[in-house]
Image (cartoon, rainbow, N blue to C red; front, side, top):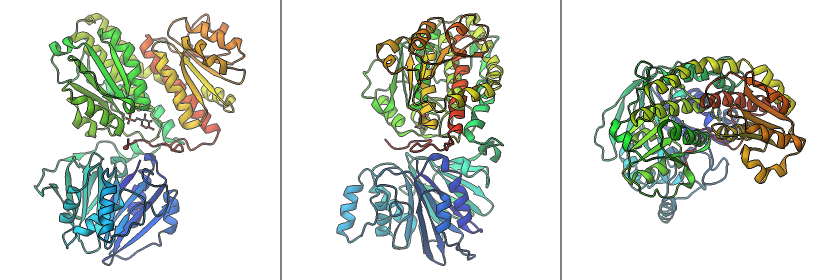
Length: 601
Ligand code: G6P
C-alpha cells in the first residue's frame, strides 16, 4: 500500500525522507519518489523498484536550504509501476504525494485538460497536483482546501510549493500521522516510520488539513476552522519497530506472541468474578437480547472471524455469520444483531466499506484492531484493542493470535452477560487463558524440529492443511501463510470435506499437515490421505496414544482446552511456513505482490 512521508526542519530533507520511506517498506510498494525544496525550486527524484534504487538517482542535494520535502512509496492502483506514475506528481511549482483513490479523477482530468493542463501519468493522483496548481495564488493552504472540495474519494496527501514556507497535509479515509521533533515536523502514513525521530505524534483525523511549519502545526477543517490538536506520546520504543536481532520481522513477531497475548489479556479478567472487563458500550441487558453476530473481515482477520463462529455459539449461545468484506452485500436488517469488524490495521478499505454499508442499518457495532485511533475505531461504537505493538512483517502473525485471544475474551463476556456461562465455567477458561503465553512459549521451543520438517518438504509443489472444528480456520490460516510467504500452492480444508473433491489432488508428493488436537475424527482423514501415499505431519496433543500409528511425523503440542490448542497450532504452522520460505530464500517480510495494509477496494 502506498506510503507517504514529509519533513520540514533544520536538517537536510533527503536523508530523512529516505530513512522514513524505508521504514514504510513493509506496506509493500513498486516504486518510490521524493520532492525536495531547494532554493525556491523543487527537485523531484523517482524510480521504479526499491528505495535503494531511488537513492541511486538522487543526486544528493546538499545545500543548507534543502530542509523541506515529501516522499512516497507507490503500490500501483491506477496505472502500472513506472517512473512516470511514481509520486511525487508536479504541476508548475507544486508537488504532491497521495495515498488513496480519487474517485472522480476522470471528470477532473477532462476539465483540467480543457484548461490546458498536460498529464504525464496514468494516475488518479496527478489531478490533485494540477487542481492545486490551478487554485494556487500564493496561499498554498487555501489552494489545497479549494482543490479538496472538488475531490471525491479518499486521500492522505502532503503538498509542497516552491514559494511556500510551509507544507500542507490533509487526510480523508487514509491514515496520516505528524511527529513533533525539535524544530522539525516529520510526517508519515504510519507511526513506526517516525519513532527514531520522535515519540510525540498527532494523528490527523478525517476531514482535517494542516499547515505544517518546522516549529508548529496549525490544524483546520476544509472550511478553515481551527481544530484541536491532540498530541499523543507513543510508548513503544524505536526498537519495537526494528528486528531485534531476528533475521526477519516475521520471526521476531512470531516470537513476540507470548507477550502480545499477555498484554491483550492484561487488566481485562477477573478470576474472582469469573468475568471479563471489556467496555463494549452495551449493557448486559442489551448483550443478553442479542440474537446474532455478523463478523466482517479480510485475509487472516477473516480466519479469526471463522473461529469465533464456533466460539460464540458455544460460549454465548450466539449464532455468527462471517463475511469476507469484499463480498459483503447488504445486511438483511434483523434487529438484535451485533456487527463486529476484525482488522489488525484498522485501515483495510474492504472492511471499512463493508462496515459502513452494514452500519446504515443502525446496529450496535464493535471492532477488534491493533492500531489505536485507526479509521475503524471511528466507525464503530466500541473497540477492543489487541496490544501487539506494530507488526511489520506483511504476513500477520502476532496480530492474529491476539485477535483470537480478544475473541475468547469477548465470548466469555458475552457468555456471562447472557447467562450462558456460569462464573465457574468462565473462571476455568480464564485460568487456562492466563497459562496460554507459557504454552505458546513451549511451542516456540520446538522451532528446530519444525524447521527440519519444513526444510524436508520445502520442495513440495503443493501442501495441504486439514483440521476440524476450531482447527478448521487454522488449517486455512496455515495454507494462507504457506501461499503468502513460501509461494507454495496450498489448500486449507475441513478434514471431513477432503473426500468431496480435493482428495483427487493427494499423491505421495503432497505433504499434509493434520491439525489433530481437537477430537479423534481427524484420524480417519489422516488415514485417507496416507492411503493415497501422502506424508502426514500431525500436530497433536502431548501423550496422544494413537496419532503416532497413523501419521508419518508427530509434533506434540502442550495439552490445553480445544480453543486454546487452536492458538498453539497457529504458532506451529506459522513457523513451518516461515522456515519453508527461509529455505527457499524468499523475501519473507515483503512477499511479492502483497501489502501489509490494503487501503483500496
Ligand atoms: C492484507 C495483509 C493480510 C491481512 C489482510 C487484512 O492482505 O497482507 O496479512 O490479513 O490485509 O488486514 P487487516 O489489517 O484488515 O487485518
